[in-house]
Every structure is written in structure tokens, then in C-alpha cells.
Length: 228
Image 1 (cartoon, rainbow, N blue to C red):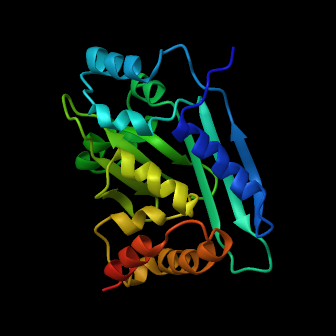
Image 2: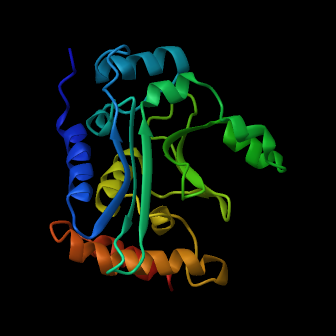
């Protein structure tokens, strides 16, 4: 018997439909895999994470906890619009935590990066076009874990938003490649961010036109802050 979706899980399914049904978007991939029931309901999953891995997440995070085995999307704007691409791949957090450290953790040349990578568990992967991922840092008894964004071009960046805020902003940005830079301590006017700067500027021009039902003003303020 299929599990009933939570209100928040349904918002993600609706977001895929929103992308799929937009004449301005070409959906290259969009898949919703089943909700994982083997780990129990959301409070039970949180209890298991605390008991087995000392990951004592604050109960407030339960309202933003997607239980999909996987939920993925890869899209681009149609030829009539400025080029914009987006991607996300979500999977069940318990699977990520129980799976152990990232395979790439031992391949970084710096010990500081290796040490950090061993503590990270991916919450949003970008295997096709993004060249990176977003991850939660797993530390004992930390109720609001750090989130880190990694790209091949720019390495690790600490985000100044938490788990709840990440998934809320993912719904709005639709996974535009590099949207996470808006929440990292980076200077987007630097030459090394020229491509990210162009994408984010385009995002805040195009998405409000395609999806006028969302509030993009906080992201505009973020972009202005990063361009100072």
C-alpha cells in the first residue's frame, strides 16, 4: 500500500508538475520514486537517527522531511527564453546517513577538506549538470546541522541557512544551478563567479515571469548583497 504524502512532500510533487506543465520549460528528466516506509514514520526516523547515529535533529525539522526514495529533476528553459538550467536529486536522509561517508571524501588533497567530507551526507545531488551537491554535516547531538555546498569549480561553501530553509528555497528556485551561492559567503562580482553571476541574474529575471505565484524578492535582496 502506497504511503500517503505529507503536505510538504505533495508540494514537491506539485513543483515537478509545475515545471512539466510550463510551456517555457523543457523537462529533461522528472521522476518521483516511492516513499520509503521501511524506516517508519517521520518521528520514528528521527528517533532512529538519534539512537543509532547520535544525530539529534530538532523536532521542528520534521515538517520539512521528504521521505522519497528519490525525487529528481533536470530541466532547461525553451529556446525562446534566456538559457537557464536546473537540477535536484533528493533521497531519504536516513539512507544517506546510514550509508556512511562520501566516496569522494578521501580524494581531496587537503586534510581539512577530507575531514569535512567525512562528516557530510548529501541531501541534494546534482549529478548531471551541476558538478556538485548540497550536504548536511553530521555531528553528534547538533540539533540544527550545518549545510555545505560543494562544486568542482569552487570547493566547499558553508551555507547560512538550515535544513528547513534549504528545502523552502529549493521549491522557489526550482534547483537552478548555483542558487546556493546566494546563501554562502562569496563575492559574486569576482571573476571566478562570472558564470554563477549570470545564471543567478537570469534566474531572477526569468523565473518570476514563468512562476509569478512565488515571492522572489528575498532572493533579489540576497543577490544584491552578494554583488556588493
